[in-house]
Length: 340
Length: 228
Image (tube, rainbow over all chains, first blue to last red; front, side):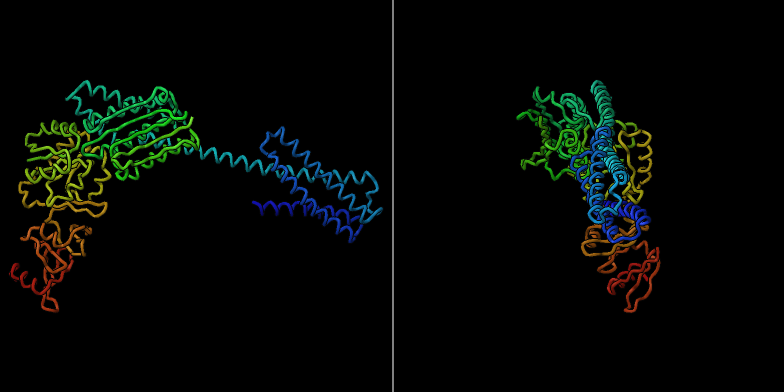
């Protein structure tokens, strides 16, 4: 990119200088002083427009709307053209005196307008290229964000419509129909609202913790029916925390991991605890289960976790965190902290 | 036909029991809620067929089979593990997807039924990394020692299985399987012919054309067995 810029600079001003040089020598013939002054013209034109570019970047004029940015940039271009013209005239007078033809103001004005056109053309080309690049970069970033959100929605949906969960659940319902028809009916309702929640889910969405907990409760009701006395659940959420917003499906992901990779892996089951409260204005949410961290399946659990972490960062900023820890006392905890 | 149901979920076991009620020829000898329980019950009850869940805590269905000396007929029951079952290279089993469709259960039982002589149907479970087989022992042609591993030849497969040749020898029926040398055990029913080796020993040709060289001592024993 940098090299291309310098090539364009040299080629553009080089061609312009050569053209002027050709026209001039056609009238005056070859002259040492003319060669010298045009070489200098080439050099200071490159230097001055380079300074112009630096100034445009330093003042961030490209980021301004066109109506405000363009007048500023073209005024600066005209200022540069004036300096160039002044230098041409001064050098010509110093080097060749009366022969230069610049003794007439009309001649100087003609040269000046030519230079002004050239420098404005330079600026126009520069702005066009730079804007085009900015536009493409912005589009690229936007697309990246869309992809990240889209992926999270897809993953969350896939996690929710986890076939293992779905078919086990249907099997439990089938068994429950004859054993406890009322419970079977409840399970169908739970499954329906859980799927509605998953289908309505948008990766960029924040939801109140109390709403997220409704889906979590449906999920836990279904898993309790399947795992029976192997799954014990405790929930303690402060009234203040319940009103706070969390990225949709994050708690659900953590609870599902805790059941699937924690408690369901234990022959005698265990206890799942969900706690939420506020601490120095920050929301602190903890999902804890009986089990060991090494028992976690590296593939399944960690992709869900990585996605939850990514959405937490995208939606709640860099200060938000999600940590998975093994207490060493047979308890694994996932802790989410979302600053106020 | 004696059946054992192995599943960690009570409701799933009960549901299968209910489905099996339509098949009076199946006697449910017991239920196991874990691999450990199943191990003990298989010893005690010697079931003809296992209804085996794959995903169970502590010991999966595959882990359980790995610990059996000899495996009964197995019908896997699973919510969603077809990919794991695809690992099975030999069609020596069936699987049922939960919730189980009664017609599929009937079809699976149909496959189990025509084996009146379980003795000759002895089978073992083999696992080589991701791939698994349930193989009738009489279909094994040859076993070859590779240190702590044994290469088992059957059909067109020859997976490398954890376990020494001596360990396999202890599991196999000595009236069919013959220790040919320190490196080989061969199935006597697979011998197609024999040649004389340079040292006066036998070189046996198995079905499929594979040749196995016998030690001199084992050569004379084999001559006696085959009376040649």
